[in-house]
Length: 167
Image (spheres, one colour):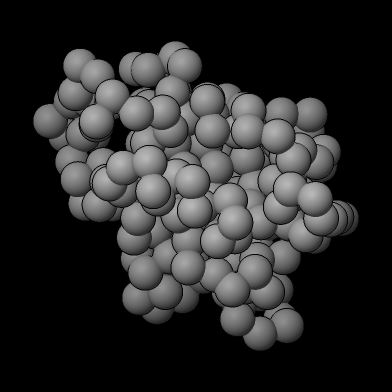
């Protein structure tokens, strides 16, 4: 997985971000779209232009949704059935618009396993109790050259993950 500390991740693709330093400019740039509204686009169709004509689309509520589901398998299946089609749909409908899922963090809830190049989300040290969030959200695009760790500018701290195109 490569690293980026620029802002290209805000202009296309899909990201999960928990760093206050990275989210700050996005939050002050306009309102976040509630997760339920973004998910409704899958049924009602995507608006002609992104909400507020902004790029990226900032979506809040994903971390809450993941924490209320009872098991890692239920979380994974929910990501595959809901977030994967949403991320793919945004990329297909608005080619030059990014979608950023604002997460509450803290950063220690996210861990990159270099053996399988997957980001896991959840509490505890046992990987079986965590959900493979990148695979659930991004399927085959979750590994390889199109996936990035987003670094907090001026540091080596990871503040999020980004995939260029969800496929």
